[in-house]
Length: 84
Image (cartoon, rainbow, N blue to C red):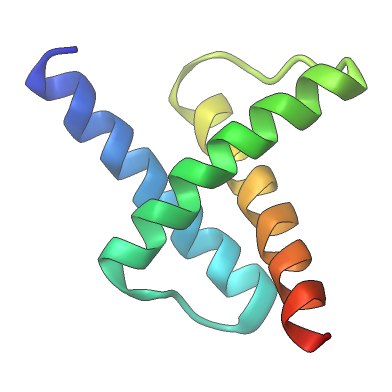
């Protein structure tokens, strides 16, 4: 991976984490928290889309949608575990 790819990867993670934070609890988690949630969300989203047979759109927008969907699911599960 070159520097541009790494920066794009981190930017997608930050945007996805921020969007998931807005959707799930009304705010973001700071830049580092957004990146972590977004990156983990991308993994979860990619797995879930694959299991469900949904092909995410390619490119930047598709990556953000996949990562955001996964991050929302991740935050939902964390919220359920945290309540118990």
